[in-house]
Amino acid sequence: MDRFQEMQIFLAVAEEQGFAAAARRLNISPPSVTRAIAAMEARIGTQLLSRTTRSLHLSEAGQRYLDDCRRILAELTEAEEAAAGSFSIPWGHLTVTAPVLFGELFVAPILGEYLDLFAQVSINALLVDRVVNMTDEGVDVAVRIGHLQEPGQQAIKVGEVRRVVCAAPAYLERHRPLHPGQLREAKIVTSSSSQLVSEWQFREGGQPLSVAVEPRLVVTANNAAINLARLGWGVTRVLSYQVASDVRAGALEIILQDFEPPALPIHVVFQNNARVPAKVNTFVDFLVSRLGQDAALNPSMQRPA
Image (cartoon, rainbow, N blue to C red; front, side, top):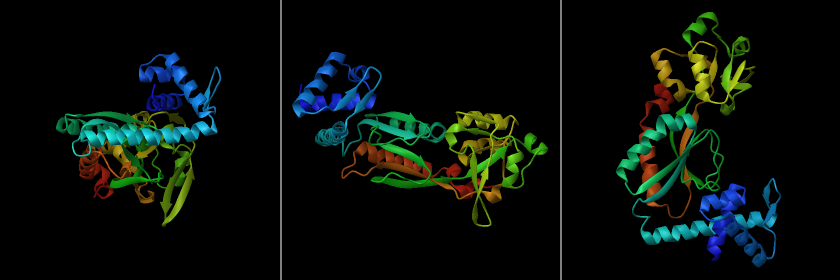
């Protein structure tokens, strides 16, 4: 077994947090994984992994070696793709990530359009409500909502979304908050994935205003919170694109608009490499063009006249 294969095995073990899982990922036997790791540690002369019956951890040397393995294997892949022409012709596998509901509403249709144009590209869409580490998880392109915190990435702004408070008209007939402070008296339903569970941010007179709320109900998915608000159960806070269709249909009404905080930017993010494969370049251009044309992602077009 050559060293590149050993590196791939070590990388799989570290990312999968286990020998058996790494073996399944690489379609090899668990004993082959064990032998490869043992051979690496013997050759290097230090322990890379600390193993117990319940857990697996990287040693300090193992973490440094993992970072180097990722870099070396990425450079190897880049060299092979360059030789095969992938920097001029879109082909190969592309991994894309976006928040769940945003991905379902906006990104998924664009993926289908792109794949119809480029038959030699396949895509894995990772739709999750967390910030995915693009390097660690092998992501080529990400859609980020909010202010960027990752250095070393290229980012193109494609729009903005508002943070809106909404409820069904039937609920608002019984209790309509006119000031954010009155939300303390409202029935609040929110999502644990929204990071807006216990404290909601507003602006009043040009100054930040923080309001502590006590949700009566916390659910794990934004869709569930929106559905409960739609049914007239209470008030929720979401991003404007998530309820745009409900607002247009009259099922939900946005309130406290004069107190909304600044809109959040939406960026398409990709790795800041010296050479970017054609599959990434073409997809980024396609995604930026489509998202940039969507009125739901332009706050000036979201507010009623």
